[in-house]
Image (tube, rainbow, N blue to C red; front, side, top):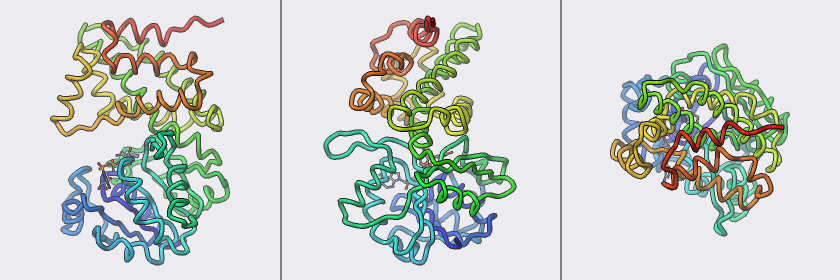
Length: 348
Ligand SMILES: NC(=O)c1ccc[n+]([C@@H]2O[C@H](COP(=O)([O-])OP(=O)(O)OC[C@H]3O[C@@H](n4cnc5c(N)ncnc54)[C@H](O)[C@@H]3O)[C@@H](O)[C@H]2O)c1
């Protein structure tokens, strides 16, 4: 594998180019119609506005009207746009893949199909390819504790690449790993993929525990740790219902990514606001005003629908997901009691 094209010049797409360049690959970076200012900064040698890191001049940049040129001759194409951009970019890019041997994907989220069935993103890509009548190569789902700015700066980072065909995941891992970017190959596409949106949901509960400390002056570290453990259990259970291996949630995509998401990030910050006593709608409006998208909020609703569609028999084993949903719906007057009840289960 030699040439790789990353679709999306946002924080993660641009950040990922660093290990790819360091691994000796010929890296193309395509910016969507929303990314012209980001491509301008990269081409001018200025720090990327979202991650404050200069992107290597070995990266060849392309603008939105140059998609075919960007992809031509690529061995791998990486989907790195936000989940809401995935269907639109997929429709443009999938017919152009040529002889590409794999699609990698850092995008995270759920994607409802036209009938309202909640799909994980690789399933959505396969569906869209089917609708377009094009055949696509294997998909490698990428997830783990990766902050784009640290990745872009070659700080030590570990991540997991998951594909239904473990040999494809291993090939990808061999091609992109560097001394500072370690890749674990996995055959568990679903397990890698389900953790990505769910950790945004659960990070809200970790933020709530921190917000309670801010509001009361009293640490709620035990509650936060109990919520963390419950979140991982629930991610593992939900993943298993969808065909994932139980252990993937206990690895980099679950434990690792929830840890990094719970340290900082918009979902945790939103939870802090709730823990401090702000109303869910008001807190969200304020974050929207600050141009801070809280992915965990829509993901909570989509996860609830997913559970009702495909995992209703384990709904009783997902009390933290249900508690977070109740809190976001404004149904809870005492968030401390709601989270406590969800994460201190009576066990036999
Ligand atoms: N930032 C991180 O540390 C990180 C780490 C791992 C994975 N991710 C995931 O990678 C994806 C991108 O995240 P990011 O941090 O780069 O976000 P970002 O906001 O910096 O960039 C978003 C990218 O998606 C594109 N996009 C957004 N809306 C679109 C639309 N409606 N149509 C077409 N394109 C659209 C933008 O043009 C841009 O290229 C997300 O799914 C995110 O969860 C991010």
